[in-house]
Length: 303
Image (cartoon, rainbow, N blue to C red; front, top):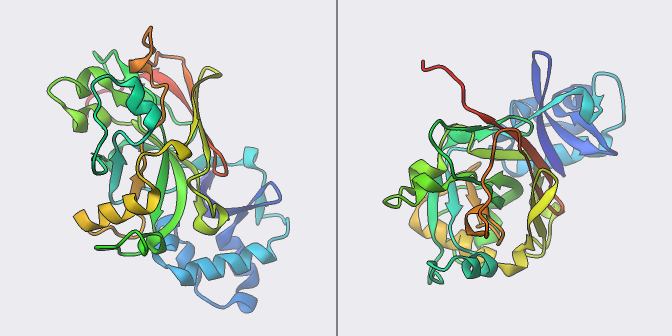
């Protein structure tokens, strides 16, 4: 199933996609609560649904089966605003994990173990929201990333048990200020300006993508595919990645882990390409969707 967070005027809810429409889970539950049982509180927001575990998934599947187009229940995509799915508690983003990205970076070394840094939840924005270029920063780069959503409290897993902790998948655009990141290795600051983590457009449940290591990834800038590869090029397989993270720290339901970016980033091109005001980025991952954002200057006032 594909799950979205949407807004219609002052109303915000979680929806499941079916037959090209969005079905409001709160409205579906009210219409079918007698047949489904369960509690409608699991649909308070998408993070609550994820934290509800198997109960929430089972109830969502029942409602998905009942979903039929009806006024106040189903909506065309163009009639609502799609938001970021939710704001995660933790976001661990991966460094070099694609052979192609390693090859294009002359300073990179093949990592013996997975490498991670933090993306800050305040950097999250949704589809259609602008990526804001900070004043004085000139080398803002694009990076499409496959994101893993944890559905259970996970600690000290093995590769054999790791995938049991996965709830679903999404897209995270790891926007990066290279002229900050590569000065004194300031990864945290270079990766976490406001709006530097577009997220979405949806979360796809794990069962929808049974082969998550065989998906095509692309990143377009102004319609040109500058990254075009697939996660079959990963250095470390997904179960190893999930297990490694959980042996470093406890991962909780709704936490996000990304898995690196393929070759084609702007910094390592000749000539280099960096995001400019007016550019439109679009990150696509097979089976998930398209995450599109326009680039603008950050003209916000200090508060």
